[in-house]
Length: 352
Ligand SMILES: C[S@@+](CC[C@H](N)C(=O)[O-])C[C@H]1O[C@@H](n2cnc3c(N)ncnc32)[C@H](O)[C@@H]1O
Image (cartoon, rainbow, N blue to C red; front, top):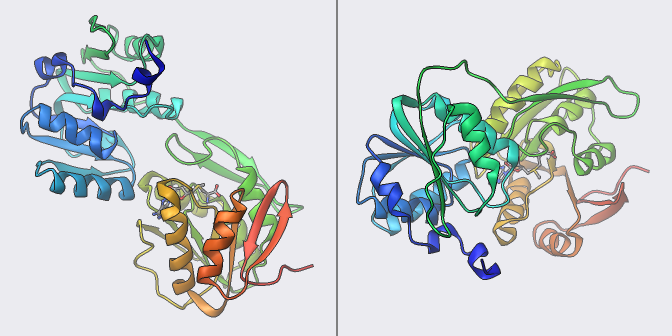
């Protein structure tokens, strides 16, 4: 197999005929890029479908792609696949190349529970000759079919019988300096599964949060940074946990509650909507750098709008040059400090 072929995205490959042979409505398409999902829907010739996404930003991109390609489907964003409001005859899972292994296990596990009896799960995998999915499907469904399709890998299996719901999650513990130790629940598909990220640690060890501060944990993941900010903001402070990944928002709520955050709100939004502008003292950000810095830019612009005029913005990064340039477009003042191998940028001088 040539290297080029291996890297060709699914959206640019012919959909294998077995997908059409096995697909019966009602159909669910699980994850996949907007281009891949629309490619499959068009191949299936308008079959009624629900497209599951975990992230609002991805869901909005998929809605836009569906509209552009004049293709009809219902897009549902939910923390868990097994929360979809109906059961399906066919589930087609489009795992991401280089995606998180634990998320793949979780999606296959949850897919079992949204199938009707004898319903079919199909996985169109971007990996050729990789036994990972064959072993996984066999473990969860009991039997797996791996038809020989040349260079394509479509695996399918049937739901037979029942099995208990098995949730994949890990709890980890973290503390800042001599502060109290906190326990955080994490689940696959949310940043830094099972551990406190080193960049996040660098950020919270550098921030200044005063008692009574109103803080936004922007792109909160499972909420570690906001929980540590709450230790300093105290009982009169307020923390807003914001993420576009709805599973992350569920976790942030659980972790805020379990770690005794006195006053908080959670917001699932890709544009940090629903927060009152000009009302926050601090924004904390550890942004993602995909989409050509579009998200990092959005984080900066929204932070500026959410902060009070004298509000403090803290961002951790390893992409210093690109982000410093973007920050200078947004804030009058940009300060930098190195900590634990990361750069923390702020619009305010760091406490010495
Ligand atoms: C690098 S992770 C940081 C997570 C956590 N704050 C930490 O420091 O460990 C970036 C987070 O931003 C979220 N995110 C991505 N795009 C977003 C958007 N448009 N709006 C809000 N959050 C977004 C991701 O889901 C992810 O949880």
